[in-house]
Length: 528
Image (cartoon, rainbow, N blue to C red):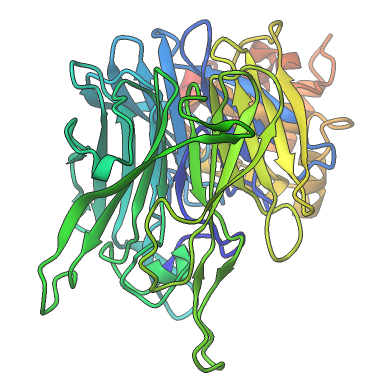
């Protein structure tokens, strides 16, 4: 068995509105936010381009207003030919409905609503994913042998008692189970007085960790490669109250996980309130908005198979949250050695304040940029009404850089097609029955050159034009491009917005009829 999870950086799953996807060789940055004018907005950064350009917003769900959203890339794939996988997202509507959305990984990259999870949500949610186990064949993974995996969601709740709800949706070979509630700490659970009484939460962060897992492994991929969903460590939830308190709760399992001995027990067992140290003491409620929590690979070390008595180390926790007086407060925790019974309130240190602006939400990842040992920390922070976000990153010397402002109050709205590598573009085109009659290496060069060729713009417009359908039979993209550029009075396009839809439809009809000896006159007639 093998887990569909990248080896480096060896970070565990976390929930936020910022991820690094599988797009291309490097992996794009992907951001999903609640758009100030209503709906949800997707931005992405092309990490294959030396200039690292951001693209977006691509808008969807524009009929409603949202409090916040969270994004993850799953192992499901609507298009098997693409290296990218489907996105899964949850979003809290202003009326309290928690919605589940997914986006296909090819074609026109359409967002679809998967349904309602439940009503009664009030704050920004978090979603994360375990990764899926696959049976390995003789040469590679068997993509049809999808074994167990799960989505986890945490969202602040309304009502008299407030609190938050954690849910899980399990995916087995036999099918996908419905969402199941895992519960939340009750209003009377004080965990020995380690947490404040605040219960009205405005935003949540979520991290699946390897802490206290019942294997000898310290990293997520190593641990999950051993077997099924029973191999999981503590689940940590970070929430900020409307009064500015930041709590961290731990959900865990004890017992022998179904083997002989003590029965398996699972539930909430620890919590603490994070405080900001100052020269005059500790500030109890210095936070605001949505936090983010992750288990990074800083300090991570697996047990050696060669060195006697060598132990494993769990790595660090990284915790960030917006501050009431501006900037982002960053804390970290040394998780200790595997097998230690370190309490949740042990090992914490305050790191630094990042930036000065007043933010409402923050999302943190560890990327594959940086040296071979560790990836950089990358962070998105934003105000609730910001038409975009601020981007920060931490380099190999632990120095933070930014903010780089992405978008502005003048940002134009609209749908922008997902930028793909040339190889992925060819696969996505093939999925809608568009192929080519020129050498592949020539086409890859043209698709990767939006400045001097029309191919990136025409390919992007094709996906939007077909949108969820495909051509009845194959046609050549090089013939489509030739027909388009030779239409009277038409300029060769260099952006998707330059492509004239009726001219593209005519170019496709001409290419279809010429290749198949037909005389279709309607564009819809060549679609299925």
